[in-house]
Amino acid sequence: ELAERAADCFAGGRLTGRHVLITAGPTREDIDPVRYISNHSSGKMGFALAEAAAEAGARVTLVSGPVHLPTPDRIERIDVISARDMLAACEAALPCDILIAAAAVADYRPQAVAPQKLKKSPDSDDGLILQLVRNPDILATLAQRADRPFSVGFAAETENLREYALRKLKTKNLDLIVANDVAIPGIGFNSEENAVSVIDRAQRETRFAQTGKGKIARQLIAFIADRFDQA
Amino acid sequence: ELAERAADCFAGGRLTGRHVLITAGPTREDIDPVRYISNHSSGKMGFALAEAAAEAGARVTLVSGPVHLPTPDRIERIDVISARDMLAACEAALPCDILIAAAAVADYRPQAVAPQKLKKSPDSDDGLILQLVRNPDILATLAQRADRPFSVGFAAETENLREYALRKLKTKNLDLIVANDVAIPGIGFNSEENAVSVIDRAQRETRFAQTGKGKIARQLIAFIADRFDQA
Image 1: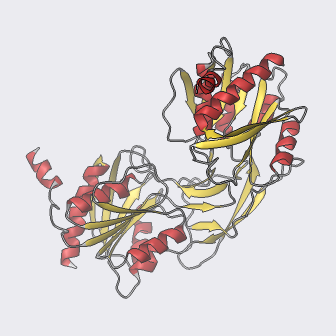
Image 2: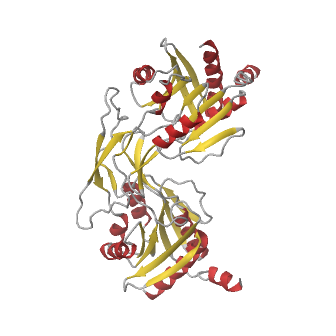
Image 3: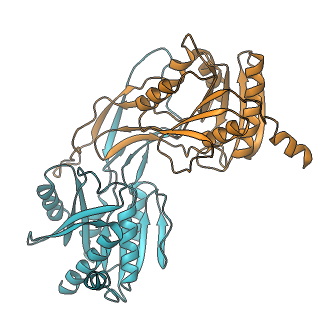
């Protein structure tokens, strides 16, 4: 128990004087005034990371999509709705030393937002074709800047986890990627626990066994602080 | 103040022995394991109506989409995700005397749910075409049964409110429709207050001035109990 408590406190003070920018939750992309597209994400992992980073002494900016979570102590929280809003809020929060992109950003948004509620025809059972366009890639945009922060991404996948995570690490120019198998029941979306692997640029993988999101967050922050110091 | 309190209590015991079925919240329609389509709806109006109906003595079944609200006392709550789940839960809860359909049901769902997360191409900025199909119409299905309950619908519109509400009343075979102008800031989605009109089959409109959703709910339940008795 003593060893466990020591591990929990490992990052204590390690991020003093550092600015850590964390994204959390889903984004919402309006179809019309009543309908939207979104991603499953409770925001719990990102909020736990924000809390752990603050515990480690960092100044933390938390940019959050629509979630139902209280703001942790000593965190500056900025609420946003869409991916474009989230990118703008992140850019406004720069510079930062470390970026942890835990948000489940919608990759696509409707090409046009209808100004009025789309009416279905009362006389037909016709479907609807929704033309979606790509959203800006927040993580890649920030990680490819000249003044880029130490950049940590998340890959939430349902298959080919290591392959997709490595591709994301490379194409987005990340320092670390946290790989999250969301097809496993009991971890991931809206659960209280998580189990992840972190992969670095040398393709070395470090596993974090299943436990509460608060504990995983403290372990991840300690690990990230280590790698940030070495970078 | 006394008159106001009297009005608040107007429905007391009026629905004793009646079974009231209420739908609330949004529905979610999966695109793939991580993405979905939904509607803006906090569920607050439907939950307030359930509470008011129970206060009026009714046995209440509340079929709710994904919301972040506690279950009111003396309510049987059934949680669902999709429109098809909501219809099945409502049909399983029959018979009922009064149906109040306050849920913001998704009119459309993706034609097929992808079994794995849809991957965007890392090499292109291509969009995505989403083919949507019509969901079953829960309210029309229940209100057109031979053993139909006294049926109350909601029309949440951003324009042409009276016209669309009347069309919905007629095509879905309703007894009453609650017309809700969701384009007005401060009422509707996720706000604490609401202001509505109720329209009957004779196209008579009764207005309920802006106030808290709990009070509007008690006024609406008293009004519905009146009209149910006259039916």
